[in-house]
Length: 400
Image (tube, rainbow, N blue to C red; front, side):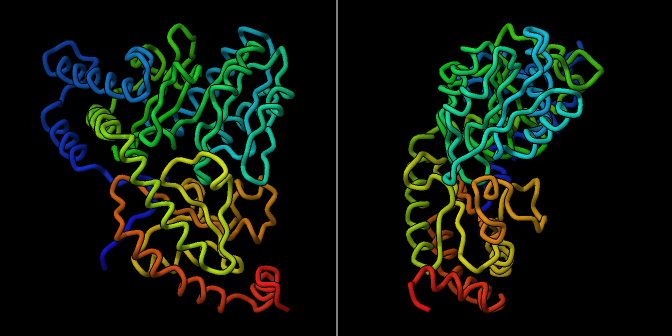
């Protein structure tokens, strides 16, 4: 059975050019980049070329990029480190985030809470919006750090980070954004956004897994999360993953080339896909939808009376890969925390199915999805308790 992969937000398939670059690096770059001999110098040169490529994608300077093992480490390094920096500068121990952040952000905030920081989680609207006025109301003169995502991992919603960062800075707080779901999907310029730090991950844009980067504004103090060596400007000890970093750099170049055209292509595919899915009775989009900006390839949709896990399993049996939310929580039977935070009832939140398109997605893939979903939803509804669908069908159609 031919697999159709529509789960790019969980991980994006390795681009061919990236795979070739990683394979060459594994063979041709055996040295430790901290070694001073020729093999070490060659590895160091390759790391620095990749660093410049990542920086270019983000609109940063090369010396502002710190390589990590991925988005989770990057978020923890930034949030836990910058909270300490902000507290040292201001004396306060408040950190502001939102109720719909990625589990890596929420987990880092939980660690800070255990260590005595006050965590303020901003509410979100039923469309997944984070209000600037709510942020302004939460900010205090002793706020150490604000951390809010540029693009939501489930909804795909894009947030006004420039305005959030300006509000934080106006009160003297530092600002971090999780840009994992935005890099390679939006044109990024961290200087224009005005953020102090931004997290990205290679495997979300067609690079290798287990490598990421953190942008840290030049001149900003960031204590390391781990103890050890002097790598990455004293910010991230441990021998660099040379082959992974090389692949990350190539992925950034490939994702950045023709980005505007690729965004338009994916947006067209998504619009056609959503139009087809919304023809199914009881289908609804979650989040801002057509009223606000989303990354081009992300759709979070629900089918009333059809639990999302069962729809995803049905699609998997047809060779189509989708998910029900963050890959970090995949396999959990709990409803989406994002949809619950938006005010959805648990049974409604459990209906979410995330479909995420990317560089490998074709029109034929979308057509196959549209051909498969109606029958799968019908089977899932038929297997569910009668009352679960019948009550909602009446609300949708107006019939008893």
